[in-house]
Image (cartoon, rainbow, N blue to C red; front, top):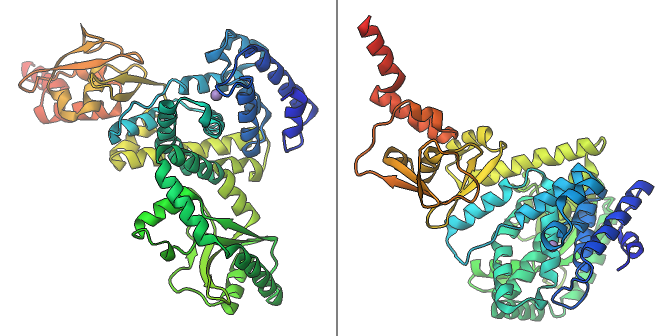
Length: 493
Ligand code: MN
C-alpha cells in the first residue's frame, strides 16, 4: 500500500492539513519499519496501515489515525518516542505512548477469574484517553484478521486474551462491529471444533431461508407503504456463529428454539416512526407473544437502542424484526465513537463528550468487578490520579495510586493483612512501611501472629482511601492515636 492508496481508502473527506498529516505519518512509519516483515511475509508496515483504516471507519479523527500508523514504532523500531514527539507533537506522541504501554499487558496462561479481572482493570487504568483503547482495539482487530500466520500456541493465547479482555471492552463501549468480528475470529481459534459444528448447523438451518427473507423484505416494505410509515431501508442480518453458540447453550442445543437466526432490520428516520413501524408490522403479521423488546424506552447497559419483535411470515417461518433509526444503528456499530458524529460542537467538545462517556463506562466496569459502594466512592478519589501496578508474590496485579506504600498494598490485598503487618519486603528486601512503591515491584507483607498496634503515623503512610478509612476506623475503635494523645494531654493539665 502506498501513501496515496492509503489516503484514497479513507472513507470521509479529509481537509488539506489532515491529508498532509496522514501522508507524513505514513511515510515516517513506513521508513521506521523499513525492512521488517510480518509472519505472512508481507511488509510490516501493512499492519499499522490496515489498523489505521479499521480505526478510521469508526473514528474519523486525523490525529488518532496518524497515531495508529505510528503505534508500533517505539516498541519495534529504532525510532524513539522522543522523535515522534518532535515530528508530530504532544497529542500524537501521547497516544502512541499509551498504546506502547498497553502492549506490555499480557495474559498469563491462567483461567483464574481474579487475575483476569485485575488485568482488565490494569488495561483500563493505563488508558486515560479513550482513543488509546480505540487504537489498541483496531490493532487487535487487524491482528486477529491475520492470525493464521502466527505460531499455533501463540494463536491460542492471543485468541483467549481477545475473548477475555478485548471483547468485554468492545461490548462495554458498544462497538458492535468490532465485538462481533473479534468474537468469531477468536472463537474459531479457541474452540475450532465447536466453531465448525455451530457454523455447519447455522448454514443447514438457514438453507432456503434467503428466499424467505427476500419475500419478507417485500412484504414488510408493502405493509409500511400501505400504513404510510416512512422508512430509510430494510436490511437482512444473519446471526454470528459465536453469538449462536452462546445462545444454543441456553436452549439445550435446540436451534429451533432460537428465533433470531435471521433478522430484518427496519431503519427509520425518527423514533416516532419506529413505533409506527412496530404497529404496522403487528397489524399485518402474526406475532409471537412475549417477544416484543423495547430497547428504545429501556436501552441496554451499553447504550444499545432498538425495538425487537418476532413474527411469522405467510409461510410460518419465524423472523425477528429489529426497528431503529439510522442514528441508533450507527451507534450500535460504532458505540462510544458515535459521539464523534452526533455531538454538536468542535473537536475538543466531541473529545470531551467521548472522554466523559469513557469515564462513566470505566466506573461501570469497575463497579461490576468489586463491592459496588465502597469501590465507587474510592474510585472517585483514586482513579484518575496516576496509578502504579505492583505484584503480589503469586503474580497478581494490584492497582495502586502513585505514592502508595506497603500499608496501602497490605490493605488492598485483604483488610486483615493490614492489621497483621509487621513489615514488608519489596523485591525480596525488607523495607520500611512508608517505602514508596514503584510499578513492577513485587511486594510481600511480613505477617505477625497477633494483630499489631497501629499508631496514627500509619495514616500518614496511607495514600488510598481504602487503607485510610480502615486505619481511621481502627484508631477510633481502639482509642489510640490522636484521641488518646489528646486525652493524655488533658489529663496532664
Ligand atoms: Mn500493532
